[in-house]
Image (cartoon, rainbow over all chains, first blue to last red; front, side, top):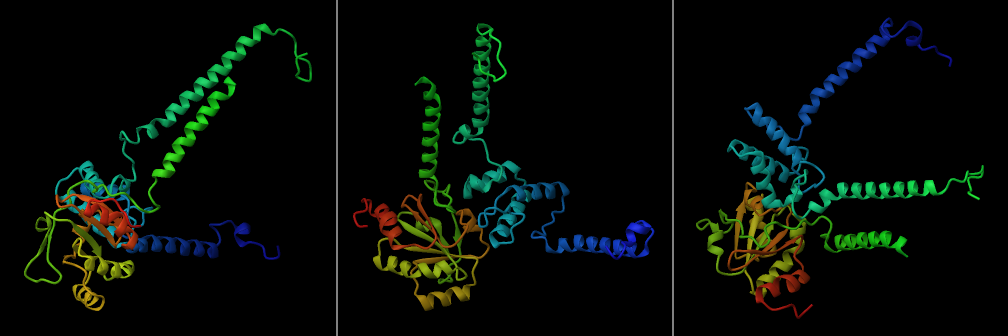
Length: 165
Length: 179
């Protein structure tokens, strides 16, 4: 390396050039963070902070049916804006979160819920991990038991190759 | 022999489950409507063509109708328009349009240029009625029975095949003979 790094020589804080660069970066980062608000998809602000919190939570767990992998909160399409309006109106009408989820599911099906619900139809899917774990535990237990019963019957030492002669 | 029974059994079970999954999985991107088998949502909206009489769902009871959601901003709607005109000419089941989040003047111009296949057209400026019907992309077409029950839903442009295989047999009450 031909040019020595000034920061390495003088220490970060001591060098005015480096400090200026840091300040510039911080100003840029703060500016971008503020500007991001202007780009937000959803400008809705409810006067009651409790309702606003529920509004934000709900719009994040409901699917935009048009883009399908985006939530209502993140989607810029028209339909998502309409559905956000419905969420807001239902909240202002005093509906509970569950009532709003049901309202959406009655129109668009359970697919609109990012958080799948437990139902008889998908019960087998919900219980599959537990069932598989039990099968695995049972199999493991059987193998271990089989081997332990073999042990007392076989007192012959094992030679270096690992084969029992 | 016995050693292989358990793995084989598990394999067969898995194959059956996956095969069922593949058979029953809807076409990619299409979501079955929870409205099927349920009463059609109520609505009362201004008419696009008749300034005096609104289009009301209760007036539609007692006979079959096709509820077609469209808009001039929707390219697929233009593609299916010829088929809609054909349905009108067939005269088997009336088409009720829902002009979804559209500009009235543009919509009227569209009908003047391409022809009007609808018996009446409801104007849904706010998009609320479309949401009640669970619409997420135009064009969508619902078949509603005389009892007011949604019996079939088609997403995307209406085609000859959908008409002859899905809609006509349901309305005439006979199995599809033509293909």
